Image (cartoon, rainbow, N blue to C red; front, side, top):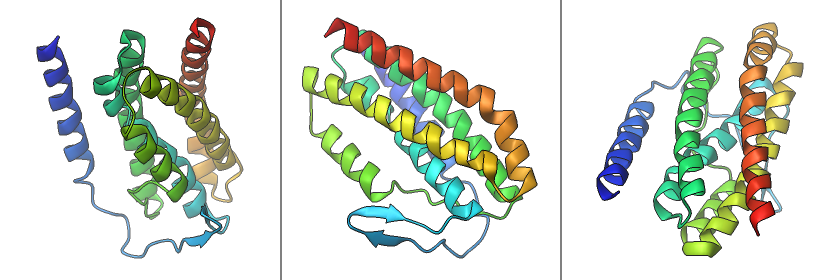
Length: 185
């Protein structure tokens, strides 16, 4: 079991290192205005992409759950999520580069706080909080992603339409996972 976990940790580390080697599409950042502890951005294609992208970054943090969870179902789901979000992140980065949109590789304030609180927990408390965060984050990601379907940029709209079945699959998987956990409580 330890060898499997170490192998998984090494795989995740390699994936994260390779993702961090992407060249940013532009040098200017989208301005972020902090209001009452929440991130707000003007409604632009850049901000729509970054809003959805932030939830991808949070989903990618599932590697922590794969290691810290005391439940095999959660560890398994977390490992699958890391792979899913790695692939999704790559798709977002490719589109952003094509459209000259800078994706910000940090969590927004709300997600950062949620992630930091999660890392302080262990055992059953960790598992419960992780499952709750999966449900909340996936719902918010799904909402943020669907806004891309109304983008002013026809290429972004077209890309979002092509990605919708993939996003729907992730959303269904997350709902089944959280529902299954909630039934066992």
